[in-house]
Image 1: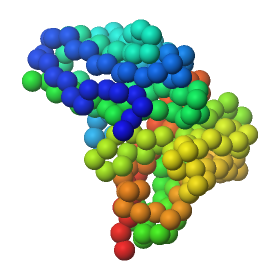
Image 2: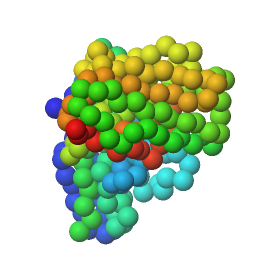
Image 3: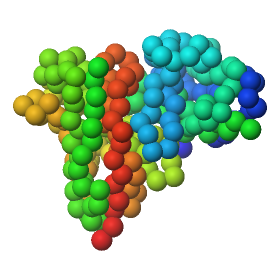
Length: 110
Length: 118
């Protein structure tokens, strides 16, 4: 069981807005940066959001991140079929001295 | 731009040692201020951090795997490597190498599938 908790699944129709949550604790999300990765089967995970809400070059502004206390959220607006993937949150844990990943949320575009 | 490529045997016998190598191009391991990480995705599960080594060779390991894992750097070959001893079926899955320049994994290899079977 992951220390960072994500819903196992999410879904939406094209054009909709979807949000994926990631719940942690004061030793990880509450004190350290949170990052989000998009993972398609058989490919390398792709950095989507770093430092809670920063996008690397090339990531559309449809993707946004936020944090409140010990929880973080990834929002995808204007949902597209190519957004169908598994999304992971990740944070360093200061108490455990490990990188933690959430369990992953499989996003389905209906 | 940093690029990473994993290599190694895709099939390992139970109780033996899994050895993988990650070759980096686009920068030098000896001069870059990176952490070099190994991450895996066990079959049917999510991502799991195995551990990392800094460019000076100092490692950090996931406590859940620490007794069986060694991560090291070979600056002469611009590679870093992973060894996992006493493998079981629980160690099967995709293994990824990734660089960590600041506080995120910025470059990833494509991954290599490891099967544990006699």
